[in-house]
Image (cartoon, rainbow over all chains, first blue to last red; front, side, top):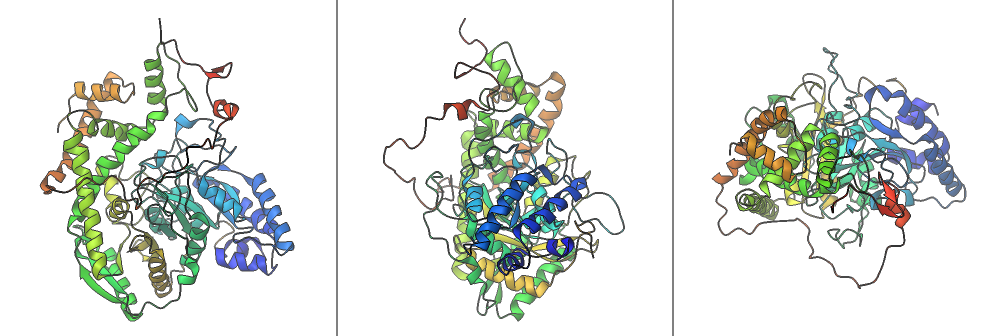
Amino acid sequence: MSDSSLLALTLAEARDGLARKFFSAHELTLAYNEAVTEIEPLNAYITPTPEPALEMADAADQRLARGEALPLDGIPIAVKDLYCTKGVLTTAASHILDGFHPPYESTVTDRLWQSGAVMLGKTNLDEFAMGSSSTTSYYGPTENPWRRPDDNRPLVPGGSSGGSAAAVAARAALAATGTDTGGSIRQPASFCGIVGLKPTYGRCSRWGVVAYASSLDHPGPMTRTVRDAAILLRAMAGNDPRDSTSAPVPVPDFEAALTGDIRGVRVGIPKEYRADGMPSEIEGLWRQGAEWLRSAGAQPVEISLPMTKYALQAYYIIAPAEASSNLARYDGVRFGLRVEGNSLDEMYELTRAAGFGAEVCRRVMIGTYVLSAGYYDAYYLKAQRVRALIARDFAAAFESVDCLLTPTAPSAAFAIDENTEDPIAMYLNDLFTVPANLAGVPAISVPAGLSAGGLPLGLQITGRAFDEETVLRVAAVLESAAQFRHVPSFVAGGRA
Amino acid sequence: MALDKAAVAHIAALARIRLTEAELEPLADELSHILTWVEQLNEVDTSGVAPMASAAVTSLPMRNDDVTDGGCRQDILSNAPRTARGFFVVPKVVE
């Protein structure tokens, strides 16, 4: 097979091609290593790892030859640079982690390598995963491989897992890991025309993932198809004694849930998601999505999630509060950047001022404030009470419906220099994704159509806790109805 | 809540982030803007609602009180900016 046809395969197709010896893991990885180089202008990778990738591929080829293939043997994937990878530079896209080579491997990536997957490299992101555009990285912004046909300005890939999304969309990774604290898997998936799944809280271990907001951080897969997401999630998921919030529940065969049969499934359409000023094309696509599901035998019903309008405000208290605590560890003593000072406090202050970017400083300071004496009850406890009401909304909805259908994001990808003036304008990107993080329920974004400007738009399916199977089954039906076959303007191997 | 420059300087000190005089004013505006926005939560009646700290389904699991890790001093020190004789080095804290 030619390189460009190797790069166009889905994960499931590559898995089958490897099993049937149509090509070797070595050939596949070689093609992907070249693709990683070819898409350098997008700045999707911070650290490519081509040599270890080929070693891992060769080991996979040996197992394949012996007939002892592992579930992901020879599948080349990208890793968001928030996952610690043993001996490989791990930056969280922050200056403050300069030179950090973790002496350990995160649980999720360890599981992937134990399943035979091949690491292509570490992908770019918003600094410490704080952002919705992948523009706050110390290593510079990532570009979306999509462009508006009538306008050549570079667009953001969304964020924070923008490098992972851009790499998968531009065919420079077969799949990728992301993390999602307020939409950081689903919104970039929507902006780049790929599938992104935030599993249930506790489904995938957070051990070894650089912490942003621990009660909201979710590792998950970013892929080209719903089936690929099901395959990758199975390898990533599972109870981990090293993460006390990891759930002691069995991991089902998610791929087996893709029966295509959604007859009788009740799909909630939350009326509060009709946000003021939502572009009519997004509302139109949403209505179309409900029609597609109805034609497949599901029953769309309007429901209410009355607390929706307070989710972002609660998030922007809780997430910064947890971040201010988690990021206290960056002090210039044990790892990363250090700026010398005359006293310990001065060293801390100078190191953190030099090491953190503007958005990280902003969130650490908001978090410090809402946790400080005199303000803790008014801000932090208030937000946690509202969070409880938001979770209650979902629980009540799931008494009458099996899943929810909503848009993923209130817009298509925007230009790199847009939405930079007002932090809150950027925060509004996460309007439809944040509630699932607060409630801990699973949600997936599926590419469903193009905007009038020619850019991908995603629809989101949200389900009950630990019912990724329904989420994936409904998402797969949505995917086959939408028939999204569009290709970005820039892909490795060319568009042919 | 509108924060003034003094309040921002105090928060920065608590957060151990050194700010220049010129950074205080714009940050006071930005942080005040964000705080005013999140204060919309005051519209919600939360009386009798318990705060939700996590979506985790289980209580903290217990395990045997056994040593499961350790003996890796070199690994721990390997990323430190300054070390000496197996320790982290920081500026003098006792006169």
